[in-house]
Length: 348
Image 1 (cartoon, helix red, strand yellow):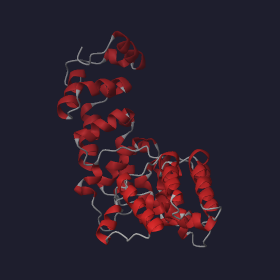
Image 2 (cartoon, rainbow, N blue to C red):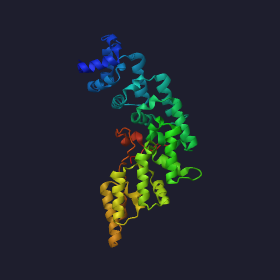
Image 3 (cartoon, one colour):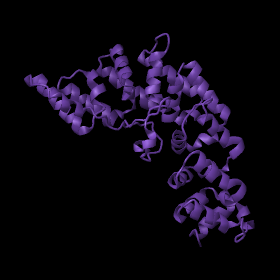
């Protein structure tokens, strides 16, 4: 009655977790105590609890004193500095996160991400990572270190670049480094000609747009590369220069952003390489910038004054087809300002 489940909902709930029939109701460890803690103390609305419990009914069976309180208060609130809205979002996204052992599994991973001997993220940054990719906790600490080792020692990234990759694309932890990641890195290196001896160009592209590692080669990266190469008249060096200038170029939608902007550039006689400038602008700024270019080409018009010209270069949000993370508008939070020795947070 409290949760408002239908008969069918109750049937599914009891089939998935029959031990609920043996649970006490009114004792200090019973169902009402769990409800009070989750609803009153953690401030999870009943309608959201209904969804969370249906997805993971074991939550109502875990010990409050020895399990749930430690995970919610000690780990989520105190260590990761989560607010109630963050906890609700986390549980709605992946309620099974509460099934993992705190001391033997979740805590060692968190310590590795937070400690200076590990990745040296701030609690705010780790909170963002877990909200973006809560299934981080489904992987072992060994797997996390294996991915970090690949980025650090096989690609030659420094600590800041590794942190940027894991912050922007934590889903890379779930990929096979020996197969999926290697094949994508190899393709990006070969198709863009990033063959300098120290690998600096390759690292610049991967660290500049980490979500490329999450993109499908055949369905995402290759069509963009083929289109751009065609627009550059098969000039591979120009393609390489464009991506090195703006690694996020390959993160924009081909059909919604790259192709329409390129068509308008070429249509008035602007060189295709200017896509690295044009792609980042908001629509209204792009229109004004393009009109200024057209005026110069057709009529020999004067450049706009520098103040107005600089105002056009306001980057728009990337239509990143690989992004599967959360968007909780924390980019504007003062906590997210660049700190010495930490990765920089920016809104593209």
